[in-house]
Each structure stands twice: as structure tokens, then as C-alpha cells.
Image (spheres, helix red, strand yellow):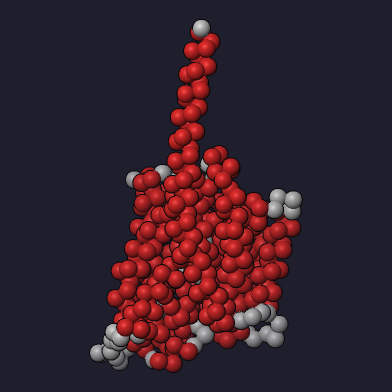
Length: 363
């Protein structure tokens, strides 16, 4: 039972890293799934197994990433880490742009991105406390986020006037949806890679399997509910900057205000894990720069990129990240095997050498 609760805690951390402004707002679900219509619901089974496989691969690689044997092979990961730094900057900026879009639309509007600036200052302060602080926050915040998203989606499904959804099954749609599923899964895996590595390093094989199943199940259920609720309400939602917030206000102002705070929480959890990952990877690769400088610099970089705007960042950058993630998922699998094989060989050689030395000593 203790093993399960440890796995549950880390599952909440991973879910919090993935359920950010893009997913909680519904914007990335529109881009990757809902724009293709109701047929996208049938691809959720495949999406679940993609998450299951991908999360397990990244968690398992955590053991390799921090193993002594990998230090001699770390050059193979340089491209991955440098690309991860770039993609994490994109995701972090999307979180800042998302909170600015949300608060300017539904609260008080400022000409200057005040909300983004405040949030990045808060995030920069919190990550000084490391992974433990993120884990403690996730335990309390992520359940509220998941419950809030599920409530809005289920409520919209119950009030929808649509009774017979139309399904499009033409070949181009099927092909594009298949690519979208893979791209979406890989995008999230790459941008949460450092969290997955850190979590995987702390888990045993059984816990790794539990975390993979829990995270994959929660994400698949949430995505399915968002797709269905977006498509049954109004086609105009497909063009909204923050579709789920729009839906929440259709239910009523109290629901809209409450869900806006839920989305803020989801932005905060993802921004924290993203900035933490950015700083840790950058420090690992450029140790000449102090962590404090990297932390401040990451916040400034996120803020500047966020000026591009939330919708454009999700629409144009996320699919590119997904394509890179697809390649890396299988590359990590191959690299894990090679490092594990080399590690086994090294142990065999060390044992033989030790035996030979002992024999020579006796002689």
C-alpha cells in the first residue's frame, strides 16, 4: 500500500506538469483533436497506450540518466537536452501568455502584461526550493484542477442540445488524427522530460508501472471529456482563445469565475515544473553559470517569448515539439538498452579482473 501512495504522489506531480494552460483551457485539445470532429473520440484508446508506453520509457530512462555508466555516454544526450531547453522555454512562455489572456479577458485588463510578470516572479521564487516543493504543491493543487475540468465538461454535456453527433471518417481525417495523437503525446513527454527523469530515478519497476497507468488514465479521461464537451456546445468554441473558460461562463458567471481560478492553478503547476526543468537541464549542461542566474534568466526569457501570444504559441510551436518528441521516445529506448548492455559488460569485466587479481595475489 505504501508503494501505491508513493506512486500516487508522483503521478500527481506528472499530471500537474502536463495539465497546463493548453490542456486546461481546451486550446491544445482543439488544435490536436476537436477540430477533426467527433471521430477523434475513438482515438483515445490509442492515445492511452501511447501515454502508457511513452511515460514508462521516460520514467525508466531516469535510472539510466543518473547512472555512473551514463556519464561516459552523456554526449549522446547533448542535442536532446539543448532542444529540451528551447522547448521548455516555449511551454513556459505559453503558460505566461495563457494567464495574461485569461486575466485580461475575465478580470481587469492592463496594457502591459502585468499578470505574466507577477506569475513569473512567483515561479522564480518557488523553484529555489526544488523538486520537493513542487511535489508538495502538486499533492494539493492537482486534484482541484482535475475535478474542476471534469465538472465543467460533464455539466456542459448535460445541458447540450445536441442529440446525434455526426462522425466524419474520411481517410485524410483518419491520417491527420493519427499523427495528432502521436504528436500530442510526444509533445507532452518532451516538455516534462526532466520531471519524468527525476521521478523515474526515485521509483522501482512496480511504481513506474503504476505511475504510467495512473497518469495515462487521468489524461485520457480528461482529454475525452474536453473533446466531447467542446463539440456538443457550439462551433464558435473552436475559435475561442480559451474554449473551456468560454464554456464555463455559458454555464453561469459563478462557474466561469471558479473555473478561471482552476485554470490559473493549472498554469501555475505547469509553469513551476517547466521552469524547474529548464534550470536543472541548463545547469547540468552549463555549470559555469550559477543556478540563481539561470533561474532569473529563464524567467526573463519566458516572459519575452510570451509576448508572441497564447494562441500562436500553441498553434505553431506545439506540433514541432511533438515531432521531435516522437523521435526522442524511441531514441531513449535504444539508448537505455545500450547503456544497460554496456553496464552489464563493465560489471562482468570488473568481476573477471577482480578474480584474476585475487588469483595473482594467492600465487
